[in-house]
Length: 294
Length: 324
Image 1: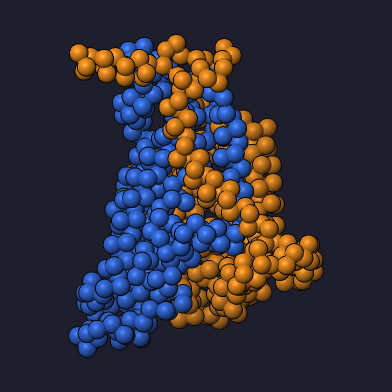
Image 2: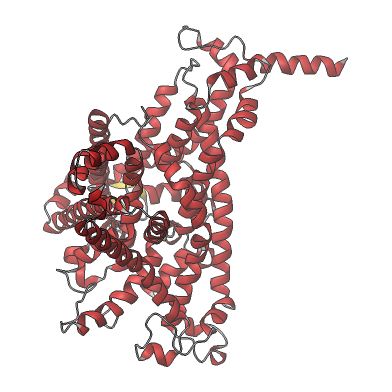
């Protein structure tokens, strides 16, 4: 153990600590910068004087956003989308995974179903056929288009099937002997003991729904039905949304397009920051459950 | 009395005994009588699968017609493989395929390398709070959308942005990260590596914690230094994971990152930054070149599907990976 105290060992340790600190800061500082821009005065932004701390602190960008109807509307759409989307996903995933996980029950057609599911979900027909088909199905401009396609996610189903497989079969068998139906076993035994897997899927699905934006842009042609991230895309990339057209510009002397965008970026990230501590606890479960199974 | 009978009726209907196991061959009817619920449970997924995944496959027919926007598919003229000839006869097609593969492969190689090196460095830190702090900060960008991260990138990498302020502070000329077509693919690759390395390392760190600590103690007692322990214990410990990730990444050779590029690109960098997905959206959908874009989309779908199957086969062969 003499080596542990040697000089080279210490130097390598310090180098590693410094590199890790630089990497960690590289992930933190960009967001700190954008946050300070959102709090800085228009003159400071114009003069490029904002570093890591706000210059000419004010909250007008935020008060402006908070009274902007387009923003509030899209924020609401996003919240509803996450709640309904996660519920639908969880219901569908558990109900689909249960029959697929009961390998010991003879069920003709199960393998065919699995193969078709894999083919259907892994073979992408492309954007145009999908778009035209959804149009034929009447999904265009419907809120359902934000909920249903993400609900059947093969990776969540695989995670769930593998978790259900880990539940001792005797548990279900004993319940059947007592007269329980498959629905009883799923709802009263399997789901209650699958909380870690369900939490993992719920969190990942929630993040996925919150972050989705292309489906909004593609399938919903009325901007007032867009979720927040679609709204943000229109703002940052095509600049379709004109801040100046909103009412009450005179009351917001310090609000600037840069500052407003920065404030919006930050507000869109806040829900992720709020669930992040829970995500961290579960993402290893998610990875290991879904992958290698001996 | 009536209550009683209904209860027993419900019960006798609900009891699925004797449970049919796969060892016994049974008729469909018995299975249906006893395990109807299992089929009913698969119904919602089956319906969605048919409507959302299989029904759109008719659209592949668009690749073989001259699409009539007014009359739809039925009113369109069948042209055979003419669309394919047109698509693959144009240099533009090969350019977007090349861009896609270059960017995707760059992301895979640099992304995995960064994740492995980062995991190895974290593993060397013997102070858990620092480990947690670094991991917390580096994993966060993965969970933010490309809209948010892209908007941050635009602020950071602009010619007046903080990164170029530093570059100029070093006495260099400002770099046009998003507006120079030779630099743009690298901006895409490295911003993606930056966004993903923290999360990418999680799977390697999970493998590293599986290594028996006694191996390190025994090696230290035998006089093996840091380098030797890394080479003979740590690397063999994560080798299966590296093989697995390498095999699985093959499936994404045509996925260069639609979200990211759509947010960050502009007409100046189309020649090197336009990928299959962005081209299909911009030229195909927005420009209503449906049949041409369907051909390109079909090409991507078919090659991508083959690659995924091949990657699963490799992962199964060399890393004992099974999806179901």
